Every structure is written in structure tokens, then in C-alpha cells.
Length: 167
Image (tube, rainbow, N blue to C red):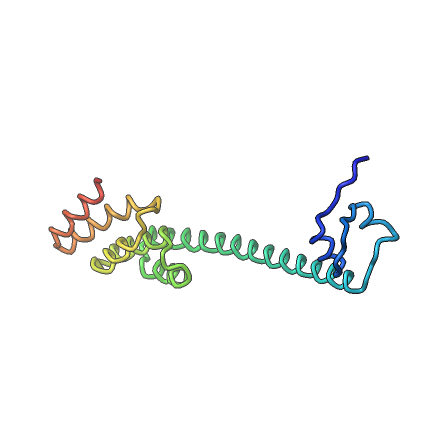
């Protein structure tokens, strides 16, 4: 069987000493390899750091997953409320989501629709204007922005928004 060798700096780091020759992996794991207290302490510390990093990564993944589910439910609830003719309740439903994630394209588009339903055309135009160009909702938001300007009797701004929408 071919022996694999670790480079000297890696061995020195693990053993906590300077060695003139490289040890094979088999020697490292054999019963007669030096198990100094320093090496055991470093190994234990590295294991603890690995476990802490893994737990932190898992907690972050759970947080992201829960936030996506909760934000999806908030948007669905706001859409339901808007379709039932309750735009003020829909706006309240979207409020916390927009405080946490102010550039959420779906929430901004829905907020603009709520504001249009309440005939707050200037605020609706501002909400539609905040939707990012890279968002899949941008096309809908840019057309709705033009309609909000048109309802607010800002013909020149509506024309500019429609020209940008058609580009």
C-alpha cells in the first residue's frame, strides 16, 4: 500500500513542534504517534469550532427558510384582503415585511396596488418606482407606475414611464 505523506508545516502545526521529516498519515494515526497535550487541545478546539460553525450555518438556513415561508404567507394574505376590497388591511399585512425587507418586489407591487385602490396615486407611484429593474415584477410595476401617474393627471410623467416600460 502506498503511503501518503503530509507536508512538514501541517505536521508541525498538529504536533505543536518542529520536525525535520514528514510523517505518514499511518504514523499519525498509529498508537505510537506522539499525543502531546498541546496537540489534543488543538484538536479539541478545532472540533468545537467546527461544531459551532455547523450549528450557526444550520440556524441561518432555518431562519431563511422560515422567513421565506412567512413572507409568502403575508403576501398571499394581503392579496386575498385586496381582492376582498380591504386595501387598508392588506397594507397593514405588508407593513412588517417592508420594514424588514424594504426592496421586496412582490410586496412593493402589492402595496402600490393597495394604494391605487385607496386612490393615493402619488404614494402608489412611489411604491411602484421602488421596484428594482432586475426584479421579475418590474414590468408589471413600471406599467402600473405609468397608470398611477395618469390617474394623478401627471401626463408627462406617465408618458416617460410608458416609454421606459416599452424599452
